[in-house]
Image 1 (cartoon, helix red, strand yellow):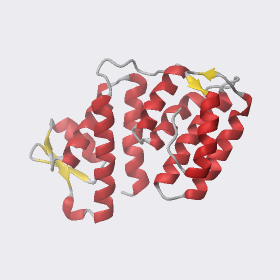
Image 2 (cartoon, rainbow, N blue to C red; image 1 turned 30 degrees about the horizontal axis):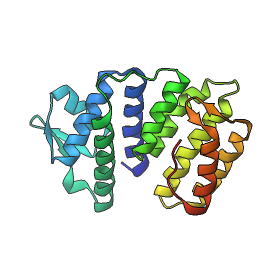
Image 3 (tube, rainbow, N blue to C red; image 1 turned 90 degrees about the vertical axis):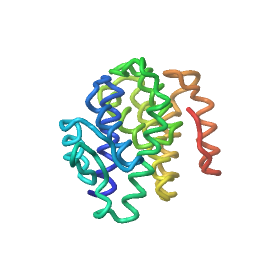
Length: 206
């Protein structure tokens, strides 16, 4: 299982949970995070088998979900632990009574903002892409700009400075037709932040 498969397993389940608040993806995430960070966790057989099937770097034996440590190289283990730590922090701050984002554009953008603050940059892309694909009006370019901001920082986190710069430049161009506040975002502040980030690589807010 490579880096991209690990990334996608986590991101798809988190975004499914945020969209519809279904319990199954949340339970799978919670179990995987605990298993990775705590050297294993006791779970129900159906849950353990489901997680191990989707994330085969974990195994379910004797009622316990745990890492297959003997099969993990140090880099993959570090990737898993870093991912689990970020998800644990995000999920611990997510209110239990949060409203699922559904197809509401502003609610999706507000949740994407929280993902961005938690350094879950790829997840910003995953969450917003679905509503962007269904938006053909005046907000389409705006949503695409936010997606590109998220992906830009994903690239920077993975040491791709060229990709970071290109995506921020594209985002800035997409934002030219907007001003004031759009979907709870102060667009003028965002444009200025992007311009600074192109020079300094500082983490912006939107």
